[in-house]
Amino acid sequence: MRLLHTMLRVGDLDKSIAFYTEALGMTLLRRKDYPEGQFTLAFVGYGNEAENSVIELTYNWGVDKYDLGNGYGHIALEVEDVYKACEDIRARGGKVTREPGPMKHGSSILAFVEDPDGYKIELLSPERKD
Image 1 (cartoon, rainbow, N blue to C red):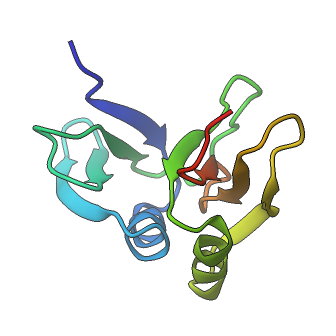
Image 2 (cartoon, helix red, strand yellow):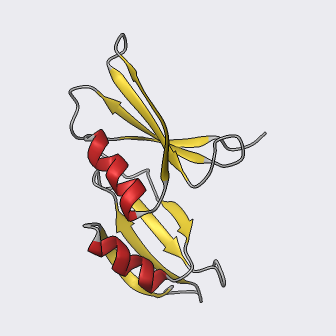
């Protein structure tokens, strides 16, 4: 078994694709409309789906917002330099919700950013992951 993808429902597919590809540096791997079901799927990631886990962005036609609830946590990404990654994301219009710095009860350097729908993404330094 292996992890294939994580699915997120999004309210503006083009805006979400731009965030994941431009601000986070992922690649749009595929996109397909399903007119019968009135939804579109787009898959983004850092490598092909045969060898990497990816994110599935699901846009249900006519739905522009979701209640994220309190069960969702975050997606974690390892980045070379958390401080630089936040600068780059902010410069591309992304929202940093927790500035880079040491973890409160650990030694990892981390930060949090938010995608256009409010999903949290943790940026972690490669040194240690507490």
